[in-house]
Amino acid sequence: MRIATAAYPLDILSSWAHYEDKLAAWVASAAASGAELLVFPEYGAMELATLSGLNVAGDLETSLFAVSDRLSDADTAHKALAAEYNVHIVAASGPAATQGRPVNRARLITPSGQIGVQDKQIMTRFEREIWGVVGGNSLQVFETAIGKIGILICYDSEFPLLGRALAQCDIIAVPSVTEALAGYWRVRIGSMARALENQCVTAMSSCVGAADWSDALGQSVGAGGIFCPPDVGFPSTGVLAAGQINVAGWTFADVDLEQIAKVREDGVVLNRNHWSDQFGRDQDAINVSLM
View 1 (cartoon, rainbow, N blue to C red):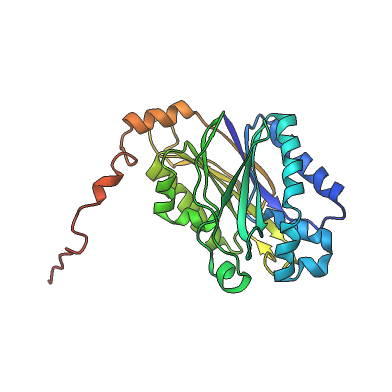
View 2: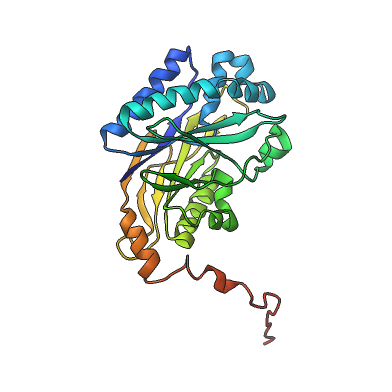
């Protein structure tokens, strides 16, 4: 199976047709390269706020609800493209104001038109202290025709127990947006750690470039990347593919689900199986040697 992860620039959209054309071009490009799973980034849907005018898009509060109002239409556009190109799409996340304060919501859309919903679990300081975005539904394992897929949205990838909750998954998508190189590396390191612990593949996407019309997403630094356990049949670096920083486009990698199963059963190490060995030990018994 081929995975495509996006380094996705945010645009000022002149019309709904502009958005549909942009999305169609991105999906067609990935499908033409043989991709079966496409991963768009966290808050990539925020460009939809520009359809309500730059005064709305530039206001932290009103932009949340402007995007939320358009997510259903965006999902309809994704469903049509998923069916046309026979691909699974992790749609760019965006605020969904279903009950009071918005959650940060990604959606996994299948060629048959099914939509799986995954909300971010743990909010960054900006989301919780300034934007007022809240945590949403519990973590989901999506059983699809191309394997078991989970989603950890950006900051969620930095928490081992959230990753462990998706230990059944063959692939964990990590949609992200980060404003600095340090943020990119935090999410990338988290993605690589989750691939190591779960002996699975993680697929990180990023927003890239300037969006000066948004106080929330003024400048994004990132790249696409696809990571794996550094074990038999996989690269010793744990990196299947890594895009160039802030270069827009797709990053591709071919993933063998049978190899994931083999490593989990008979790898050089068995991190996934040995997870529970770390519990039951006396974590407080730290010996300090005085020299």
